Image (cartoon, rainbow, N blue to C red; front, side, top):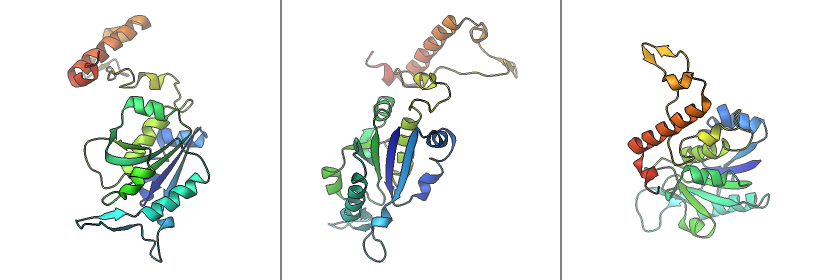
Length: 227
């Protein structure tokens, strides 16, 4: 089982994405455990402050080191983490091999930034890895964290009903997925390729691979650069 703790100042943003569909079933089956930790529980003073103005001026607030450190140390007293990950726009970009590697771990902590991010000293001394989901900026790290949990959680053994399904996802072999069709075989005169109706599964596999290569070459040629 994989355990993931997510530190956030907006826990409500994570409740729904992590409670339904594949992730909801994974948690119900005890294959994935996700705890959402409200950082404000560790906030300072009567108002549970978790952010302050940046040294040197400038717009935006920075998440303070003390509440984060108190939260992290509390969590570390309960378990040992394989990775303490900060969701950062300048982190290494999430891809399928990274998701595969993370899915083999036991305990992961995800830190969601907000405002202008977290105090740099936490990044320097505590965080073990920084991950981005793309070259754009979100209002906070919560949605990015949900993406990471989804990409990783679906790979856990027993999560998907078809055990081989995840092996044929896009990017697993540096190819995007081939075209997929379902019933009816003829829709508005648009017909399913005959090969998929042939029952010749060896030929179907070859066709799918060929189509995946063609689609990758057309849409994501960068994935084939190393070949």
